Length: 324
Ligand code: DP6
Image (cartoon, rainbow, N blue to C red; front, side, top):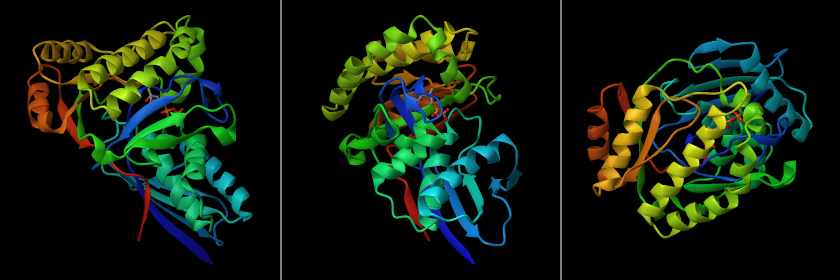
């Protein structure tokens, strides 16, 4: 007997970043975070519970995956089996429509889509909050890809209280993300490893302590569509996270010369009145955020910077959802 469901989820870009955990196993974050889902970019995942299987299987972008990749997926499936009171193994088939190594975190969309598809296939009808909690256990940022639009992950202090919710609908402020890709190389230390190093930086406690203030400024700037306040706070937050990364033991240095070239170009544009702001995740590529009306110009300007290989574009996206 088989039971199947297919879900689509979007990646997201964090404006106030998640870096470091209070509980690594459960991914209870050190601080709250704010993000925007990215429309146009998506992961589509089909989960089929099949009584003839004797283990879980995973196919990603048409390639079979075993080892740690499959193990991480299997852990979420085990959680879902537990919740549904079933013991059947599942076949997971997943694909992204955006390139890996593009500076767009695929784990957020992947685990949001997996949480929705697997829980539905198992016959669970989870509410958005429960889905966000489930997605969080696979990848912290995936909690934010479950609700749509502008999202805040409330850090909480337990498994049940750490989840994300929409605080402004996607239509409320048309922003675009132009991703300046400066390297497609696989990063040496991914986010999961990076989170465990955060507390070795003497700056992490200061960054975490100040997080409620930055969250408040960012939330209000989004609600009031105040681009200049928004730009200042997201650049500050990104710089603070990278300061922690760069002062961890061992240090994590994600920036490359072209990363800095884009950062300083964006700051110069803003000084001259052009509305754009940068934010950078655990990699060298730069997300440049601007009002949708400036998207084409921003992408064009970025392409002219030496070292920028490619520019990907997205606007504000909706929630994870089931498809036929
Ligand atoms: C720098 O959610 O990718 O992108 O929970 O280990 O999968 P895991 O980490 P992940 O961390 C994201 C880190 C970040 C900032 C952010 O998206 O908030």
